[in-house]
Image (cartoon, rainbow over all chains, first blue to last red; front, side):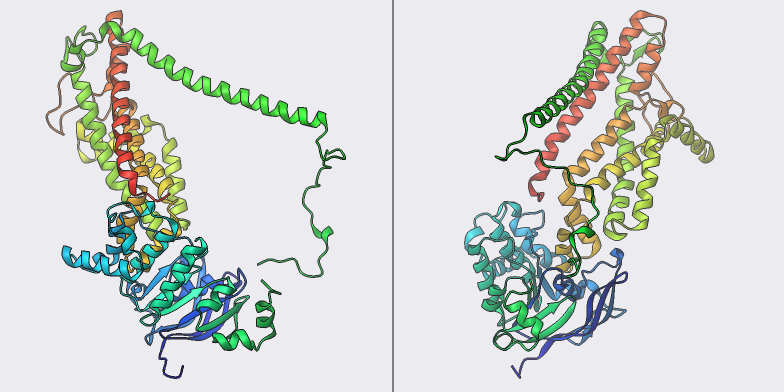
Length: 254
Length: 316
């Protein structure tokens, strides 16, 4: 793993809500073109950490963010950063698939359109490309005009993946992306993530340890807002250094 | 995570005392207790049935009265002619002036109110943050404005007219009724827009969409049926209001041909016709009321069909 450049590095990140510290002093490098899985018991700040990566934490809800997150060397919480530019670099898969209220085609075409692609044939080609990449093309090629909400939940999550990829990000963020899906669809999404890691940096939050074992190259264990341990997946699973990690892996804390 | 600290004991819990369970040894409820629950159920069912009956009864009674009393005067000339012999005493002709006046006035006011409401609501929910202080204060203001009687809007509109040198006219009526509709439309829109799931807007943001793109391409699309309903509610309120147009739009026998001429409205037509000493003219008031009711009914049905047409993309 020596040659892996670092795409995202987090330096001294603190997130507070009033006097409550949600994330405490997180310093972390996320390896490029690998699947990094953030695990930890519920309520430990996994989702907050993920959302802080593309600035989806809402300051109007009283959340204060301190510290730095560098993406390609640029501090995304810097004063003159264009937030849409940052977010475009990262595709987001949420817990429950959130399709946009429009047709299947328009969902995937959403990002290309707002970023300036107007030409119809080019747009159709782009949409097909990303639907194929998300492994959905064969299932929806005859119903591109139907409302996206009519797809099954598993298909919707892959549509969200295609939609995110169409924004041409370098990073894919997944916030428990399979928690609303049936086992078959979960497998499908996991397989897609494994296929995509040769071209993308993937960061996934999960509370399913078995899933983490299946897909992770790199593990970050978060407990009560702190990074307790992080390292290559095999090492962390086989020889956890911290007693809390050991306790979590054996199911004593959950 | 707020787990109980390891040392804490059960007695720390200070909730209401848990009543004794009324079960016998086999786990069945005692017959007395069961009868009591059954009785509660029956009492509330009857109460609900009665209130339903009251609402539906009122509606049918109103419609029936209007149609029954207005039937003798309800002729085609009623809809296709302007009044003959004055709106107050005239026994001939129709209320075309008021029908067209009401439609243009309420239509114009609704468009004006929409142009103000939609930006306000989108600003509050997408830009300011749905639970921000600005949003809460604006909501509170609208709630107060909603309760202001329409005659006060009429008086305010009249002052405004004097201030800008506008005479009694369709335009003045449109402005006043738009002010009357604004809080109603905004609050109704706000109620649907604030229910847009946070994840949905986040999804748009995560694709690099700006707030404006998120507002118009995602939020408006998602809430379109609700927005249409809001517009309809406001229109219904606008077309049915008499007090706000009394001083501002005035009344006339003619169909207005410009924004600066006075305009007749259906509620005022009813008001004047009811106030005459002649029973024949009072009959015409009921016919006018029937026309107004039917007009609102048609608009409701059409827009409901439109809502169904536009809600196919909405995510539930």
